[in-house]
Image (cartoon, rainbow, N blue to C red; front, side, top):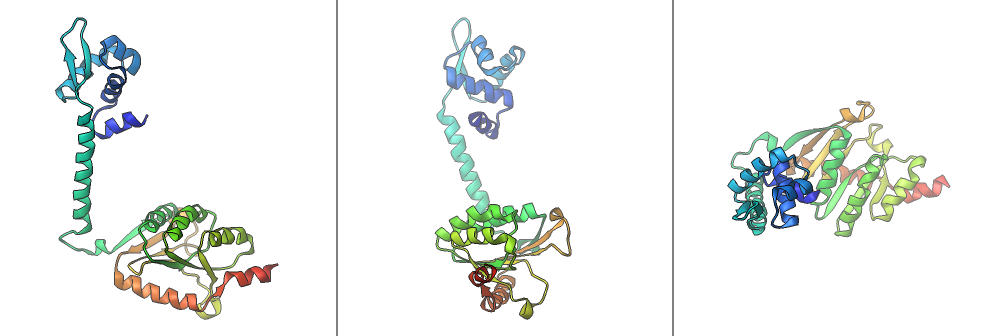
Length: 255
């Protein structure tokens, strides 16, 4: 239940969250009412109620038998606001650390799943251009929704790929969302197809996979936020792009 998960994130225990949620839903309630609704063991409820009162979440009403109610629901909202403020402060500090080390510019991501998740998150931040190589595997096909949203924001997405007649449907799905695709010039750039992507010329990734690494979970990706390295990779990819063939010409040949 989302409300209980929120309460737990705000520092309440599982039982405290359930009891508080029940009081929010029921209003002024007796221990019996709380036990029936929350499913928290009766032996624990008194202890939980005392704990919530110490945390200024609930109050005990001066009636017999005892009843309880939440103190002020707005206090929960204020805690959420405070958490957002703390997050904003931490984010600002993280974006501009006082000490720059090599780890601020390069790091390693292991496994296909990790790089897929990173690519989806990064696509949302790109403003102008994504240029890269892509074999359009079925596993990466899940990224198409992210790419569609990226293209719709006005970002130019250019992908250089090898051609596989069995992947025509995947190519066409990517073309439909606005991805531009050209086929790798093996004669000019050699038989080893690189795995490189550059984002706005500011960040880049280079992945080591097949044929050198057989298992997807063992793939290694070097991710860099170095503009110098990113521009170097972009220049290489732009040259590759200019010397590659639009995929539509391969569709005609494959008929």
